[in-house]
Length: 107
Length: 122
Picture 1: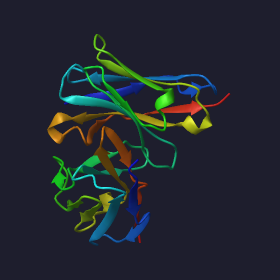
Picture 2: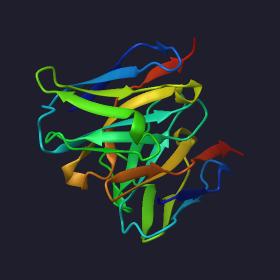
Picture 3: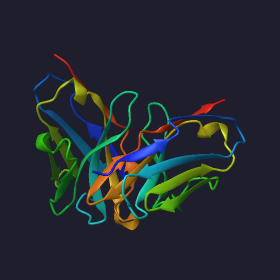
């Protein structure tokens, strides 16, 4: 079973900061990695799919990179609406699993 | 635009079976363009994929839940369903239905329902 490890679990940051969240897979998953934003009481919202493809309607300050076992989500300049929890999610061998989440907090 | 809506009893007794339904609007559940999934999230915790179903009837389940999970489809009602047997308090969670589309290789969940809370308690 492939394990997904996200870091950090909590990230204090300020508006305008550039931040990066990392997701590591216990074995290679190619580019089958997605990123989601979740706000309290809401369903997750897809931001990035296939490691680096920006979902329609998602601001261009969000970007994803990586392949194999190491992936990153970058927000180039934090906006007030970006403070939320972020999850990575992998797909392979007909199975999906999510990372533990990264809570982006106001510093 | 596809929309999903979960429904089901909010309270289930321990050892009983949790049954939830997801109603799909905006497209046919019979379309070959979608896999339909259930995902859950205990309060304050991470997301857990439960399983998925395709129009062919094929299913894939999370190995940790496989022995207790059954998913099915009702094309006449444009719905798909989840049954989780022998529930315990650990199954208390927000349950989401979600779709993964062919255009993204079925690998990412681009449409989600709003979620429904299921509580296991006597």
